Length: 206
Image 1: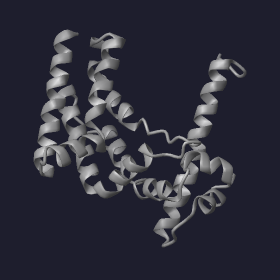
Image 2: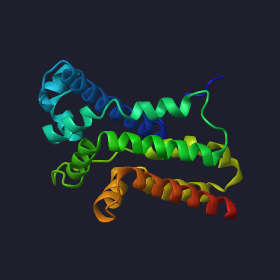
Image 3: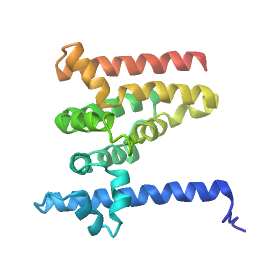
Image 4: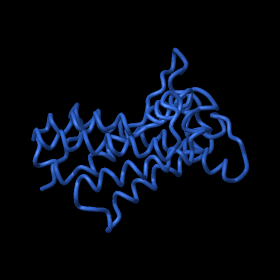
């Protein structure tokens, strides 16, 4: 018999979280579709197209700039999801991690201006409406490192994922490009090397 936990505080909290994600995604996809059609939507227009209240939409996208940047990038992360789910994705954890880091950096460099704008906007949100960053990179890492999950303690696996997350974002691109003055290829090679080194160190401790 399938257990139903309707009304349980934990289940109710999870459902609210899922509903918020669905609502945010609906507004984002509406804006993306409008951009593809040649329009430049406001937050209110994207909310109306998604049948979401204007006040709710502004909680997720405090400014039109933030909405437009995220809508522009909407098509990029699904490519990483497809990579992780592909039948030819490697079985070896180190090879999987290297493929993931490579793919993420191709995505970042291919949309660098938009990702930098997203970083700037997310670090300077409205004081009344803070912007929450996406947790996609954590999910990607957990999938890529799934082959070693059973060999590490839960705490060790979580530490590995959270540490490697530093390398899967535009923040690292800023360090490599602006501070270290590296071209894209060298920046990617450095990050791939660092990610592999951390994985090997973590496995040695498991």
